[in-house]
Image (cartoon, rainbow, N blue to C red):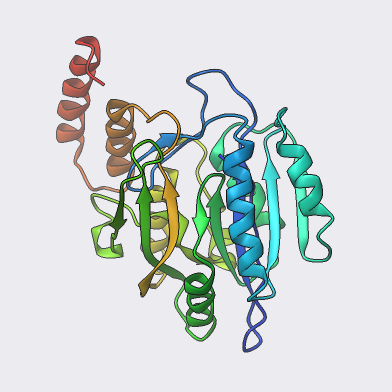
Length: 275
């Protein structure tokens, strides 16, 4: 995935951070997976996707004074040249390029480097919608919730088809709000130590469940603020279901007997070649 963007918004004495990550080059089957409605791998060395993401964040920065932290996974294509230009953009921009162990390692690095009161995560190939996201930042700056979330556009780069994706916090028992649209209070991320890197696909859902269990408040922004790009190889549906099942068990959403039965059934599907 892509660069970690941490954005600082000075609005009513509050600040907001946005976080983005660019993936290090890996072979097929690398850990660049995420669960945000539709899990996927980010295409390695995707300088074009990174450029698209950076353009959208620059447009947002023209509207709001935000801090931008970029965490790159030691890419070897033209991405570093793009990031060098970003680093020269001036105060409020931080660029880090070093190997990582996957998307959630990079996202943890991003929010720890950020100084904003709220943190948003934007991965390479994805885009913020500048004016809508600016209004969203104002909304969060004037409120008291710990996690804000909104709608996103899901785009298939192969067909050009788009659709609006919407999930709500009351659905966390079976799904997740897409982390691309979330603004999470940094102090809450720090208290729960961020993403649990034992999960490779759906650590965002685990994070939001832990935040809910710790009493964090969630609030929906009635707007479409970002574009989620479906480029790259999809994560195995079976692997995603297995990880979701582990998360359900860890949070008491499924009992031990049902967990064992469902895991055995999914294991049989794996032996049968199901994906």
